[in-house]
Length: 309
Image (tube, rainbow, N blue to C red; front, side, top):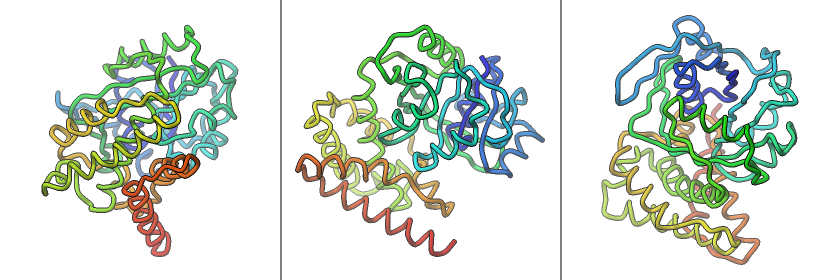
């Protein structure tokens, strides 16, 4: 397949590297000139538990430089930049291009549907971890999965082909008719681990340095899932708890994307994660005190970052 990765940070580059290694025609689209230059010059270095390899059979360019429609565009941009990024990459989106959001947060399907027919919009969640240590170098340790579905719930050939392509790259993808529950479960996971790590500067594993760390993370999970359930979305709290505990045990050195943003002086996605949960909770008169407190703390960090850059 001809695949574009829109937002080639840690996750996007990791996915792009594996998809290119599996024989697909992959183009990384990003605005990080140092990263693009490193990939063009030396290839993309991908490190996993099975070792390190350099992937050279991929392209890297700015979104506005992509002039030919692709079969599949996987969107990894931060939610607040989604529409600007898609507009920049408009020439790479043809009538048959599938847009797949594997982004964090809520509201992504609606954003993508502004640029493609809803039949070509897919949404999903992934538990793959990824880190970018320096331009042109990404790593992922531990296993992950992808749960995905068309935004309108239709079982299509494009959906089957996309899942098969991801699986062909070893990315463990499945079709999940309950994708909205999965999205809320991922939001609960991120509201707990991303925001806690962003505020404390802890790696995932360091959240267990005190006896209160894991119970606090699990309380946030409970708050978020309770909002989803109140909205008749069948998010499963036990499933999220299992994923959080697995991350605490096996992804101990991982720095979640929100922490990576804080450390790099970038704006975080807190509004589309904790913020979206707080908005949904307020709309139904539901209290989420821990989730809301972390929202305000990360927004203070964001405000300080904007003032110093």
